[in-house]
Image (cartoon, rainbow, N blue to C red; front, side):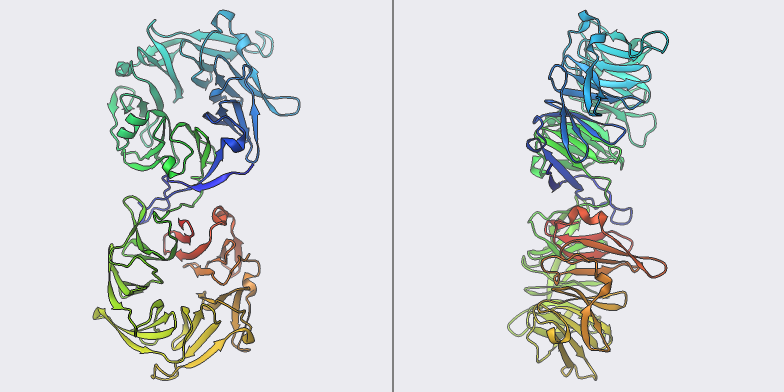
Length: 630
């Protein structure tokens, strides 16, 4: 069954270094009802011991095994509202005027088995089973006017499969059962008209202080993350409270207005300790334990609907959302997160400077604001193409269409303006022979610039080297005084400066006659050797033969339509990261110098074109893709 893969807002902690506040969007798989053949309304989830998911759907119980969907009909053809799983792995289902469990038939397919026949006939008249809870004492099916506890008779006292039924009724004639929760070995039942009650034996005892919720609706009762013995209470009218077993205290959060306007439906604690809350009309809101909003997901973020009936955490730590219109699965267990650009632009280069991440793009320069994890425009830099960064002596520079900018914080300013005599700079490289000299590749050749550490704003043009017309994309200097230049459409060029005359280099051009395929070349310095991306894949230079040839190291790398526009880099451990248009691959270096090829963890974005891979020391790996940063 096909599925829609989108990237949506949600808390996703990437790492615990100085960038720990940068949070992004994890990958999500969206399953629209039109594809799953289910009803457009969904109500809840449960996962069996095999990992198969069951969804409370408007047509019944929908089964999903990871590849296919199957509908399991309820006896009275009503919808599935609530689920529970007992210690044996049996799944129980609460529906409309019906409850039962799932069991395999002769073929091994799950079917619904009703338990209604075990209930005395006068008590079979009830409405929705709002909550289903599995406890050691039995299974509790909670409707508005009664709660059914079904437990199987001990062996020897009754025929196998016999069920004993106990019926609990509200505390007073004006009260009705609202919701039930099984938390910390206790069954808690909220009764409108009374308050929160707890089951002791066969009696429901009112919790002192809970009468403030007597006319409210309680939607969540769950352990508060990081606080032993404390629970989080979520209601319609009163918002959020904490309960320590003795008293209820308001828990004020940045999400209070959202919950008040949107009506809380469900809540779960996520693996990182944040709290996800589903609402009736305002989507999903995520807060941390201090009440700060981490993210707010709505239909504007890509969800099917702002109506989310339930949120569920499976054993793989994925988060399932029951929405009007379909199902969403947030893959929070993956170590990947997505940071889109509001403009829809694609980052082509990254640089971490003074703790802040910058991204060059075709519509300007962006920085990642750690406060809200959004990429925002750097002021003072023209809103057009920006190119490869250069950091020198604690300063950050960036070439763009207007010239070369110096970046400071969230603003930039020109230190060298392009004009009729100063061509557009595409790439920059600081000379290994003379630290004051900067080689600048341009749209039509190469020039040298002079940089004075004492005056970092005073860049000047030293020379525009004669004899060049090529679009120079990259500059690599394997040894002082020898440069390799990657071109857009003319192979590779080697420059060798044999003396101090910068205007008289030895120029050697390499193309098809020297083994290079026609077209663009991309140059990379990987583990002390040069690698060249070409239209036919990755190549290397044979110094003895003065020719290029396919690089056997990358023989198993899958290539895209134009692999010459590839990207490759290394990290501090000598691992190699590469994408040639088809897939991202990590060549992990072993202690003995060999490499293992890994790519499974990147399959989530194989359909994305990767412009750049940026490795941070003691930080994450960043990928510039067509849909933003990953």
